[in-house]
Image 1 (cartoon, rainbow, N blue to C red):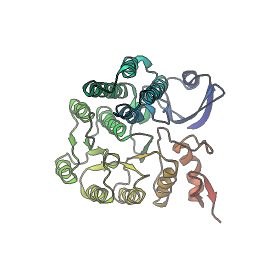
Image 2: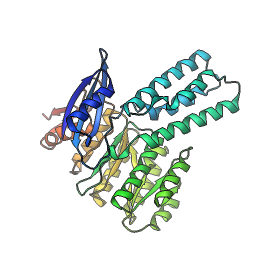
Image 3: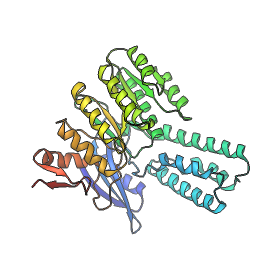
Image 4: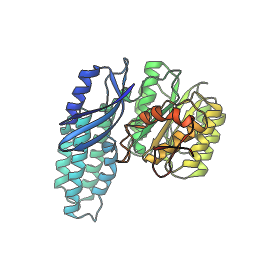
Amino acid sequence: MSTKTYKADTLQKVLEIIRQELGPDALILSSTRNEFDGKVEVAATLQQHTETDGFIVSDPRGAILDSHSLIDELFQQDLSRKRRRDQIKTLQSQLHGVMVSLGVDPSTTTDLISQLDSYTASDDLVRADLRAELIARLAHVLSTNIRITSIAPEPTADTQWLVFSGLTASGVSTIITKLAVQWHLRQHLPVAVWSFCTDDKSSMLQDNCTSAGIPFIQSSDVFEAESWANSLRRGTTVLTDFGVNLNQGDVRMREFTKLAGHLDVALHTVLDVTRHPRITSEFLQLQCDHQPKSILLTHCDEANAWGHIISELVRLDTPLSVLSTGQRIPDDHQLASAQWLAHKFVKEIREGFQFSDSLPGNPKQNT
């Protein structure tokens, strides 16, 4: 595994350079992008991986996922015409950038953007239809063009932790469903999906699971889910988006950790460590006590969250194998990713380094 920096005029050219150097089986585990003087710089953590069907550079802004909030802003009644046009331009720029980076034809949403640009806020029905159609189109782009096999290698006996960053709750719901389908079809692992997602993606997630023969439940009731989980085959791995789709704080998180502790299935969730640092620590402790080979999917958008989660894993003396899809890192650090950070610093941490509170991800010597 190595971390290298590539520069070219466009991101597509950077990808071509990487393909030429490593071949089509290269896996880009994570990356950060900088743009300066008309150049694009990609610092990528790379690994040869013979079973992936391609590779992906994650846009650390999570633009295609974060676009939902922009879309919602567009449909506010009191938004001025000028402000709406500015927002549409921003949305168009974000979508174009991320689609190009994924190798997707940017014209996928061009017609809808044009409609948005011309509509007026006077017709609620038209506005609602456009919003629903645009979000559905984005969901389709996500489901067909983000190749999850490139982000998540097949689980092995050495796999402990998978860490995803820069994703919205709806994006995480899509990711766990894709993971479940992948593991079920490729590895024949007994898996199930428990989703808290209640937006217009819920039916799509259920359809994907049902067509693959994967048990699925959509519920925000922990006790209802417990009954469902107990009916599953012993040894089943349950993937859930609990931690990012439920915003009711410590009480429900405690219900979840208690549930995870006594089920006969392996329950893995996505935690927002920036909002629940203490509960995250308790969850990590529970995982280490009961499921030392567990796979933890973690959502965190802020760099200081990485310092927290990695220091917790080290404190619990947990074997560390981190996979990131593109952490948002402060400009003054320019670390390639949490993957790079973990491999570079974990040895030093164990030997007496610690993370500085003021500089997330920056180790300093104990005195």
